[in-house]
Length: 432
Image (cartoon, rainbow, N blue to C red):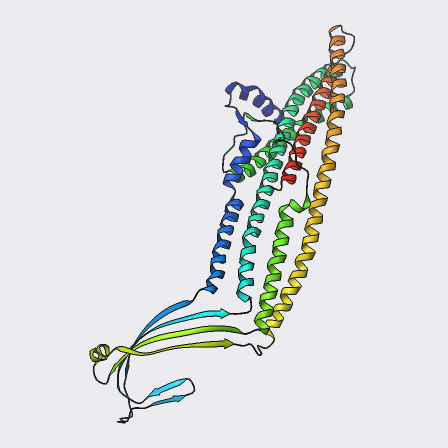
């Protein structure tokens, strides 16, 4: 039943016709780079880092604030002598009246032995770090699109070959049935070709599912919908002259170098916060008014009352070893970053060398497949001529055609993988 449905599909569906969809790798790649959620997020991360730099630089500016207070106090003791008593942080006023005040205050960090400079340096380093992450994301997106495009291209090529093989296996089974009926072929030999026919049908189903799944992933990356029917993919072409891979130009190298510099600046800032004082300037201007019985009179009584300015030195003496623990933690994180850097760069170098070796092997494989295809074509042509002269049976001719289709599929696959590997090497060398 399954074979019958598939036969109807191959004979009836082409009669309906589909609008062909041609995809080009560069067009698909541009769409993915425009649509990528990760890339858009990385651009926002860069903007966030720039905002954090502004926040860090704000420590160089004075802080200004104003405050308005209005207060009504009622003495419940009945004392006629106004006085103020303090108990700890509690202020007890023994007078009745209304009070209003306006204060304008300012403060400025005059000197902190370079703590601000290193905090600003940390924020500065974070911007190129996030830019390097964006470059890494761009490169990884390109490679992901390349892999999907390559897999779809290979699967489409294999699907075309399997459809051709399916027809050849059908012809072969029909021919062998005649031989079996004539007693010239065993039932075992006939069943072998029938099994290959069923396996080819299953392979076609699996390839269709694989292509559909890959197209869904590609749609997620590009934001565009793709129809499998009539879909064709242009070959992957190298873009310009390839650059030589340089590990120090990779985004990973840049990311870890900046992360190490940022962590070192953090350690310096924490160390100075532990051992050095911070000197600041503060000032305030106060307007005050009061009346014992009327809020309005209290408000009208407001006038300049005082102005003060002062210096403050905040000297850390003991904080329960909190800051020292923070310094120790930051130093261990610095060592951890160094280990992670060595690991990541080693992985990246190994990945590139593996890819380069794979590209070399695929190049040789492509040449071998070309030679094998030439031999298969020659053998198939000879069998066709001999079949016309009734020298060999139709079965042998069909089997040579099957070998020829299989060899063409292998050559196409090798060519696609070779081109994709060469393009991936270019992307790796560009660092994008």
